[in-house]
Image 1 (cartoon, rainbow, N blue to C red):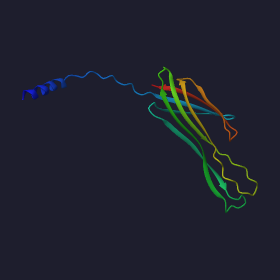
Image 2 (cartoon, rainbow, N blue to C red; image 1 turned 90 degrees about the vertical axis):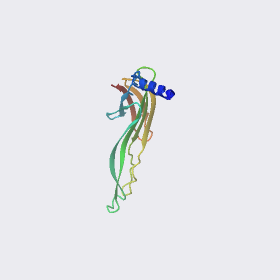
Image 3 (cartoon, helix red, strand yellow; image 1 turned 45 degrees about the horizontal axis):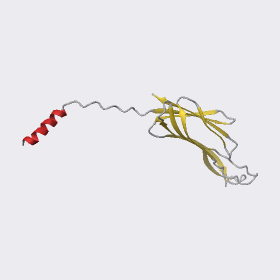
Image 4 (tube, rainbow, N blue to C red; image 1 turned 90 degrees about the horizontal axis):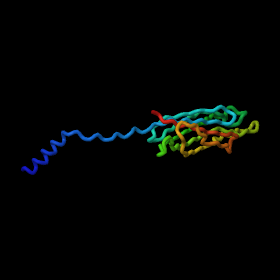
Length: 170
């Protein structure tokens, strides 16, 4: 009987003592990623995403474009269709062991429209949706605007320049 009472008494006494403070883990960082996309001959577009370093963030912009199919001179056989121009951006940022450096993984997909000209009176073909995809996986210095891609689109006569700035949010 005494053998059981001693451990129970000892446990009861220790349960009332305060435990040593556990070191708090730092909160995961949040990063703001600014993407500057320039098409040659057009103005620069700017997109930014803020998200934690533990996961990915993604957004998609799209604009519906309506078009007609069927013979040009026959309104009864004309059909109205739509497709879209779009831009998708997916990013992930990871801290590196070197202070002030991060690893950025950026996926950028730009879908355009291209329509072949049709001879008068013949049915116009539906537009094509050529896509240009960028994948960047690079170490970057925080707060510095860096050119990460410059690509000539092989399908459409376009050139894309992509710059990125990554900043750590407080």
